[in-house]
Image (cartoon, rainbow, N blue to C red; front, side):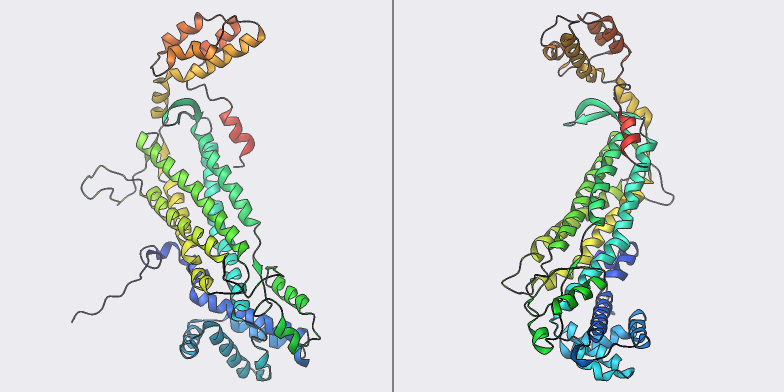
Length: 462
């Protein structure tokens, strides 16, 4: 019988694992348990600092011993925790027992009953997931997204002066510059990234129904809301004072929505770049050793942008589902959020993979100015807007007796190709000032780009 072949169920742990390994380190099951242990240790230290149950604060050496044990958390600890969980059938309880064992090893066993004191599992989990999300977003996802926004800004400035025929509704329209169009995406993305960078990460520690009931009954001498706030904020999170058994996940949902929105902006970018490639406005730089098609040797396929499209769509679906599911619970608690939160890393992973594909894709394209110039030269009718607007200004200024300038120009240009010569003859016969005629005679589709380059220079940081 052939040996059993085992492979990862999902592509993020298989085909694309090397591209998201840094995120996996931050949001893996092992990272979750390490973070849970971190929260439990810090809660224990906080309790002793407040003399709960008549304890005295742990010494500096004792605190260091416990914190070092977390920083040294390794594969052997993962295995040991797994063995405990196999018996408890409860992941957070396994962490509690694991920490009790550490206390016994280091002569602090008398504090065992302060481990997980007055906590429900969600007290530990909500803080752990908030920390994992914060670390993964600010440590991995946001730096990559920021780098992509900077890549786009660099290209926008590089190509700010390259004229290009715009395509509104897919039809020839008022020219722009390629750099200005890229600048739009950089500006949109940076705005979302600013929102994400300023996001709050909320946490709570207040017991089984958010009332501090067990805390207050067991040790009424402590001001438990103050203790809780101090503790949560010491972890680098914002304190949520009013919750049920669960932290309400509203802040998480806001972050997921913003990450998903960023993804939709980038999906728009990917499809536009793909379209510009198909139009010949962009060329693809051959990469040594690569194959475009298994049967057509000439092909270079825009796979980076296609891959990004697919992964952004998957990420968007997961992020939207998380945002809607996590903010709803039956009465004071149900477990729908527990399974959902295990997919946060998956959602961010697909988004991160897309970011990296787009960044790589941008290094494998170049602009074809000649193709853009040819398209502009073949569409003189796009100057119709300029002509009718000049006539409007002339009428208001009293230097033209024409009426309904839009209709005048539409009769010449709508649905028709117009040559340079035809357009110049038309302008020469208009009842407008000589200065206006001179401006229009000098105008070409390539020059009719307004202040596109100046917009990039003035409103988009490189």
